Length: 587
Image (cartoon, rainbow, N blue to C red; front, side, top):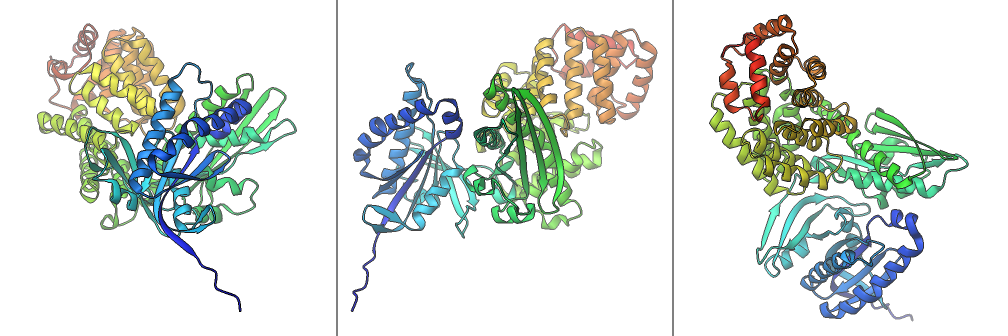
């Protein structure tokens, strides 16, 4: 009679860490990357594990699995590892900048000789996909063990669903040492309330196409999209099995739990490259965006980076449009916080008083439904700012104060969101005339997400305010290149018009401002500046006609009143005011 096999179990904290951008590093220099990874294992990972009572369970390619007896030790080890890797990257002799993503869970595991099996291992290997390079993400259970034992802040990422894990997992991002602060700061709306996107492996086509380039392109796009906090992007490891798929878009989307699929191909012929990408709304199997990019492979990585940034920026407004269409017609009493933001955005830029009020109500309701929703605070700050700029404010002082408060709160809730940082920067420049702090906020936003079109345009406007017209034009050009069909395109064109006035290009200013008004005829900021530009360029008849029409929409307008608050600096403000007076607007 056979004896029963004894199953050995124990509670363990499991850390799973892998190298970010592994494919790109190997593509650039496989030998140097392999040597650097081996060196990190021998000089950083293995020697310091005993300090944290850790045991190396497995090394698999670019990843390691480590067991700890304590969740506290596991998190301490992860923080120490990230610090040592940062120190290594700062050394002049470092040729391969290794960055790692770490996920930690604590579960009951099955022990088989030196290996570990069970749900805890699976969860740790999935949770790390939520981490950006240099970040650590832990499960709710780990957070409950460490929150009052380590001087770390933990940002709540909400519940997430991972491949082959049947239940939702609540996760937290470990922030750097905050000098003894022990908090659990909420950040962003849970992922299931955001637009969800999966990037399928780009196909390499043609006799000269190397498969690795398609893989590298896919990884670059995922990395770029992941910087946008409005989107939840499925990790590359979850989409690899669809490399040569024959499944339908709806089947893939259902399996991955996403609404949108981005797929594409890379074709190479001698020195020429052609990349084609398509964004699908999987539920309706409808193509909502496609683009083709041509280039040469003289600088492969630069071209790859440019395409990834362009695709990331281009699909953001397309996804937003599709999401807004999705919630139209639904009863508002069934909206969650994310849907409220979409509903507000769907009417805000109509710029009439009634729709502006609806937008404000929607953003406020989003915050009431989810007080931790950083972008909802940013949108409400922008709304108060828009009321002032468009002459709809009944109390400018109150709107100014609220815009400032909501913008600051948005950044507190999610300091990694480029949109929130950009709004906060604009509030500082437009309403407070604090230009240096504004430019610092824009710099942070662009460092976090170089594809953020709004950050480029808003920083350009601040530069125009301070007299740097040419640099402002270059920045807005970046915004228009990255997001030519943005909901704020009319605003980008108006900014170009203001920058052109500052740069002394009055004919170009008239052209840009006319284009802005064609895109949004109700945008009063463009109308004001167009009147000034036409008057200054000598077209007084047209300027005076526009001035009459402008006063019908804003009968209380005076040039001196406008000059008292508008942030454009001397001597450019005086020139604009002169143009407004020449057009016949009340002094």
